[in-house]
Image (cartoon, rainbow, N blue to C red; front, side, top):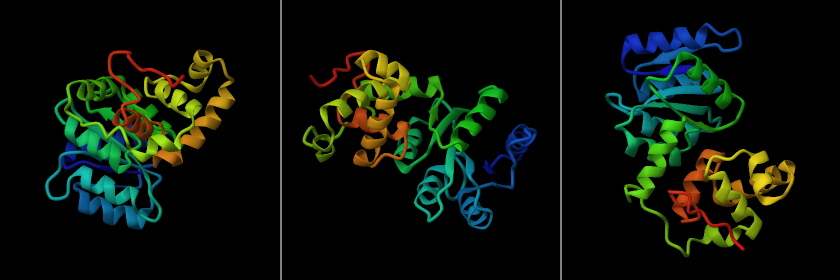
Length: 222
């Protein structure tokens, strides 16, 4: 993986934390988005740990280009509480995870492993910020006639509603009275219909479409 941050000391610390793990290898580091793209093209990393605010090309633009590349890496974005606009745009650009910069080293390592395994993750604090932003109108929802809604079966909509609250497949299955394996099958079916690469992007789409509402008011299709 590669680490991208414009602050040398921060970058060195991240490399040291991640590189200290036997199963994780840092193959390079970059100080801005342009350097990150050039390095990724050469090293072909599985994961890119990406800062948001950097001079020149920022992490948002770099994330969009990386995830649209021929061999896209998984991107784990490091953010702070006052970078919400970047976070939402980067989610839509294909980022697979978000961590706060003040997270514990162990949480950072766990997040890298999760993203490397092909899963998506949001720290609880970032998830709360995301939900609050939809609640206050900072992030606009899509039109109710969005064609993506018509592509989902009623059961897929039910699963998506509960997925957006952060429930696991097993927890969704318990709520809906179906097996966890069946939930997984529905998730695998709904992701391509929504144009979502993983559960994080599916959560964004659920809020976009108005299927998920902050404050626990999510209503499954009957």
